[in-house]
Length: 118
Figure: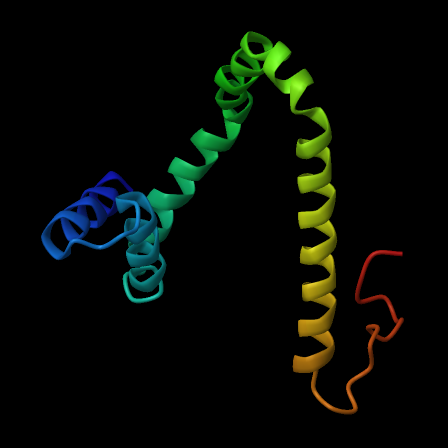
């Protein structure tokens, strides 16, 4: 994973791309993943380790919130409006895209018959 991040950083520097290096590295990993089967076990073990300690990654964000609580209180209304508005736009756009790209004649809901959760 670090190799792909390094590749992404190098591409950003060499090509002057306006994207973060880790994002480009993640795209490169996504492209290489189906082609290089031996990556699977390494990525799985790395992902398991990251997921096991995922809670620790929220500590710096929580400390930042506590540190700037007064600032967050001052900006509470704009933050809430931005969160609610962006959520509404995302849900609406997702529903519109689903309706537009769904195969014609395909059922909107999966057939009931033991294939999914009860």
